[in-house]
View 1 (cartoon, helix red, strand yellow):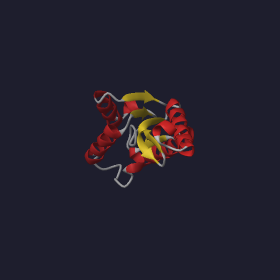
View 2 (cartoon, one colour; view 1 turned 180 degrees about the vertical axis):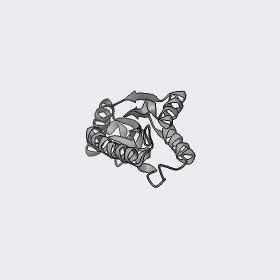
View 3 (spheres, one colour; view 1 turned 120 degrees about the vertical axis):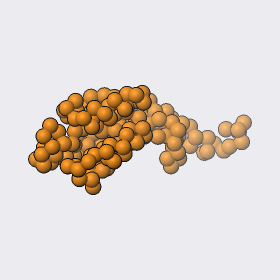
View 4 (cartoon, one colour; view 1 turned 180 degrees about the horizontal axis):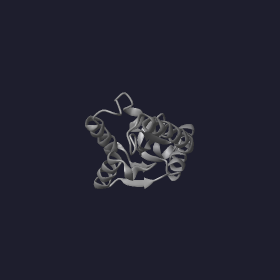
Length: 148
């Protein structure tokens, strides 16, 4: 500590912070780079891809899918507390799900650009929007993983 011109207390704090950052990074959920309090890290983010309209686009199917994604996100938040969940079905819930989806899809693609990974849920292969999101994510080189 003396060699670097800092007192013993400050040197101890630096060592503790270093060990905390190292442990967080090794846990795989935090990446060095962003300042948060006295620690520096950045949360990993995951785009949550799940069908909205389903096969029929009926109000019942939309309601069922929204209930499913609510439950999925609640579970994910409990399992992965240090992952920022980017759920477009929640973020853009103010749009009418029965109306045109071009504007929503454009915003979803911007969210995918920001995400570190894309996590797939439900019968995503039957959803044109989900297939477009997956194709876009893969073109960007994002990790795409089926989670359930």
